[in-house]
Image (cartoon, rainbow, N blue to C red; front, side, top):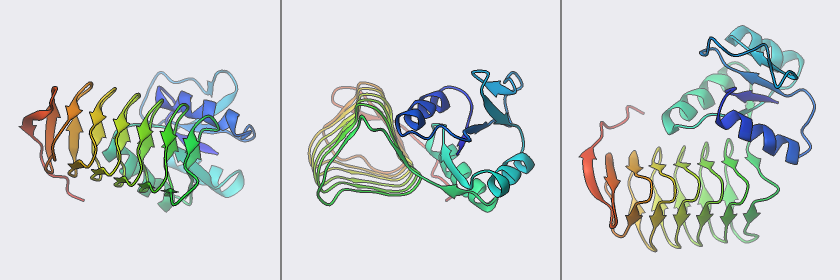
Length: 215
């Protein structure tokens, strides 16, 4: 499997692959960093350009997963590597707890160690649910949402696509958060939040407006 990215979060994705027993033909992709070695941990190849990625998909393994954060970047790489012939897959830690009833996790998601997702939860494509997050019953998570470690989403919540929820933030029950929203680390969201803004504080309040996304 090809992991998009070769630093930071990609190393945590590697750990999930090991948990899942996916130990053959792991490679990474980084065409940006100038200081990356040829091999990560002196074992796993790091591909440097799109041509190498296409060749990998054709000759080794067509699957890829996202090893980067940032909702917009995840969307771009999600689309790009499918055009190169890749097949996006979700990776879910064996040490995450996923509800048995009516919980649906779409393609291209990363669900990391220690996360608890209960019943009747919908997680759309491309999401990153980081270490030790919780998502309560009857919640809906939009596309390419990023939850940093320790986020707690209570029951009956809605989080719009491309939103980024900071470390240890808490979303109280029955709250709706719009699209392209940044919730600062440690914030407690007690009321609905509109699209395209950044909120912070306890309780969270709007600190600035954000430029709407063009997709």
